[in-house]
Length: 367
Image 1 (cartoon, one colour):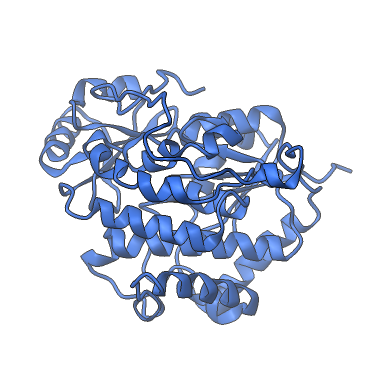
Image 2 (cartoon, one colour):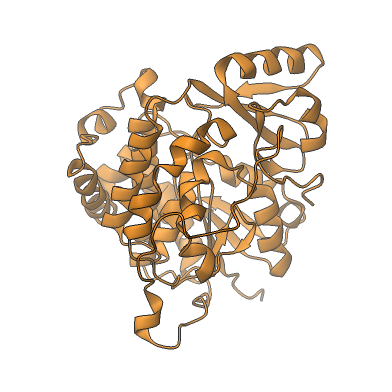
């Protein structure tokens, strides 16, 4: 008999949002409803009234704006992940995409949920007024799209060897899209109204440093992989305010991070958030496609009725229930060492310089 495989939870980010995402599970699963109510109340304390529009599955441009999409994505990722942990599943690792990394870090214990919501609310406020823009999914590798990039339109994400996202201000992104389509590339706009993961957001992102520097940061209690510095997140990285502040302006290297994670062993990759975009990416990975690792979604690809969403969740959870417990991250010498002291903003050094056309170092081949 094949031994059970460890679980890795994946957390989606901007672009994964859908009207009514998770609403069916909210009505059908009391445990998830409790966790979702808990995090929505934290947002309410910062002036974000999300519940009514979310439950009504309202649509419109504001649904993809940062004041709606970002809080709901964080909330849903955290609440689904927390419900899985409440069921007794101890994942071997957590890996998030964009805002999903903040949700993963919160579940790993790096931040308290209340602090994470405060940090996210501050991030959204700092990004208010930045140039309109977006993200463009292109079926190509980083080298192939390099001729279409500029100082502002950059590779904002590497999701797989031939799946990248360009990011930048609207005018420049539209020009790049027109040229790419004319040259035969398959492109699709992601659901984002801001140029996330492009250097045009750097100045605004850095304004989040003062609050970030004042928040306690704990050593991860679960193994946490980063898609910004692909590989296990170290405590030194986690306690650097610049690491978190610059995430909206830095590229997401989800593909390379997944490569590193799957290089270690075969696992069950479980997407803990709306849709199954990361599940689809994972299923195309050679390690999964060849039948070693597996990928499942805890929510359906599209929002469904309560019984449909509950059935999808229960089936996926049953696959995870027999998984061996994952190891905790390396323990600190004592409990007091697990919480960093607040760091004055600006003291951290080693800020990654942003290269024109890439947004930061991007591997030519992510395999």
